[in-house]
Length: 342
Image (cartoon, rainbow, N blue to C red; front, top):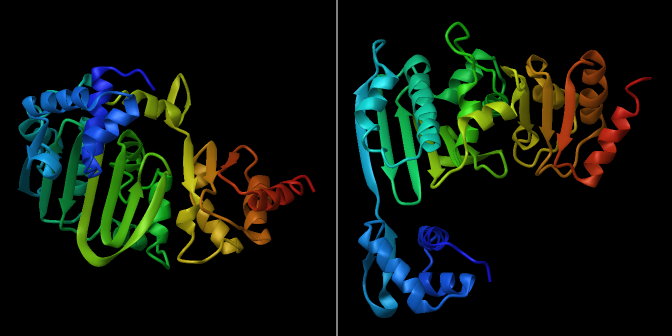
């Protein structure tokens, strides 16, 4: 059995409560080889700390995380300042966070609020922050034109789902004079869960499988961004920026990660050159491009050839990397790469 600190055991209890486990004490006791009495003591400590609340008794006992929330609705004007919103709503409320956690929250919140102010074309901003002993969550919502609709119109895209792929690459903005197009790319990687909802789409970055999207039955007007940071967190803003920079002495945004599953619509396979060109749109702005084939079982010869022979021949200075490919996909990639010098 793993040796565990008090903090580790308490976090395991909190996680078990989050997922709705009805046998919290028994589950954690078995996980760490502890007695039920010992685990029950840790549960009582969490109750005394106001981290969890308990209802019922005996077999009907239920535990819930104590959630504290603050929210505000704010008219969107040209004079609205995201830093002042943070100071008024968040500073004291999040004083329990460590320095690295606070910087992540500050960066993500102010970036998303600024996006709403500058891009949404909405009249009202709705912001919410919720905290528990295990996470802090932000919601930033506007009643504007919708982020996916705006990208679709700006790039003259045939299918609005392509806007999800473009957004995931980074370095895209509808206002290049004032924005670099890096906010969503980096913020999504700082948090453990990051979701953008607009129209009938939800673009989700879950910290494990990178980006994926879901179709929603209910249409959302405007744009809603939800960010969740698990506590405690050792992640730093610096390490996220470093991961996608061109080097230790140059913080330029030089590397991107492209999830190929976002280029598939429904049951479509990636087979054509036109699909490959959609994947490659704007990637010439980067020095290194990581193409993630996770969730893609098959690609066609023309698709692979357009990326790994035609594009690579035309852009020899750009480093193409592929990850998450099945054996069948690798065969197509290697076939295309073998003809690069011909």
